[in-house]
Figure 1 (tube, rainbow, N blue to C red):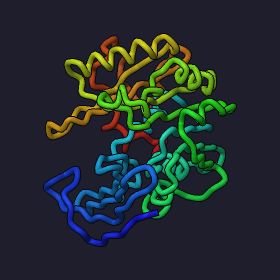
Figure 2 (figure 1 turned 30 degrees about the vertical axis):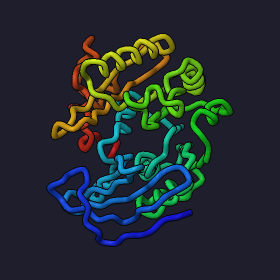
Figure 3 (figure 1 turned 90 degrees about the vertical axis):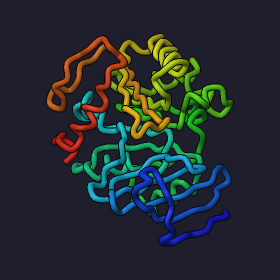
Figure 4 (figure 1 turned 180 degrees about the horizontal axis):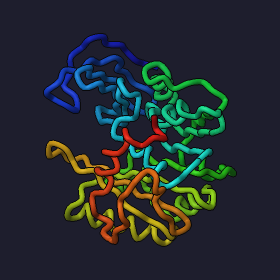
Length: 279
């Protein structure tokens, strides 16, 4: 394993007006990894090949712009979680911290051991019997999996640019969607993250994904995060369920809409800190 540590090395990051410190930079057998910190905005993030993977707010300890909280808008008391794509594991760590009655179980699928080492060292991923680590590919895990989950987080870096990449082509294949559906409890949901711009060919790509999902799931909702500072990155979160479902009313007053391109995600994200279940 080849890596080197840089302390207090300034580097321009997601927010160019702020300085950042490179806390770690090195290579695993799969990718070039780095951990960067911006104290001015309480940002700590992990990067793969200089592209942002995920991070957390060092003050609130909550994941940075993560859709993980959407599970609270749909499920009342989820107990079994699956994360396909671990990264710094900020979302599963947040779920673990709020589990006061020690009743949940979390499976994390991440093939890169160094990613999880960094998650433990810099992002406080705990060692606990409720958290099970699987060092394997997501596709292989789904083939072998026999368990059922209340919530599945599918966040493998699937982007418009990678739609034809052999490494990511399985993400929207029929076999994968069948395995995901099979792994859900009757009321369970899938939070499926895609990176693309909602325009031209990329919007067509999202429409095609939506139609593919509708073949396997009766319920398919889309939340879109508006791009910031005219950047090319835009997150789209599909909520998939086997049955038609309603929002968990105590956590949102949003009305249902037939416009699947409406920007509900931004408003929901604004309610994150006010949702009592997260405090």
